[in-house]
Image 1 (cartoon, rainbow, N blue to C red):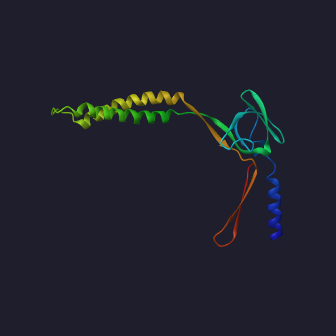
Image 2: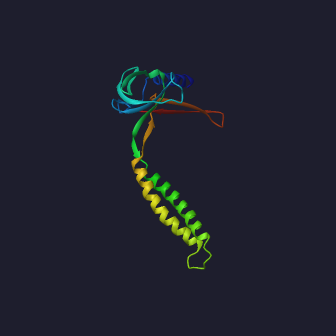
Image 3: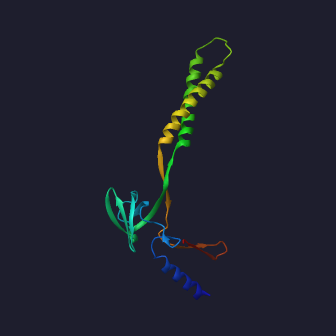
Length: 182
């Protein structure tokens, strides 16, 4: 039993050295994709962002600012693939509504605070109307800004198609988890 376990761990250990994760027989990274990379050679806070030009057995070639760079796969510590750009419309709508309503409520309350007349509209009513008017204006402005602002989304790609995790159990045993990307 112990021999079979050790043999399995050895085979899995050798399998993890096979490079970039594969998807359906093809590499998870292909030519033309935008990628973000961290390597051993660069400061850990710096991402290299570029477009893949080629993936070789031991090297990833990417275009960085118009120049091609060859990055050894062994030096890559993190790799992310772009999953596209997305608009920030709803974020802009929400921020515009909150900012506009807040400004409108404060402005409306300030306008009616000095008015001692016993009219039909209270300070809270004027503040509410200010919040509604300025909130509506904030939604329009925030929506336009959000619709024209985009951000890129990134998905992490495993460097190894096989991941093995050993975890201690509360009963003194060990759990083995195997994750295989294909």
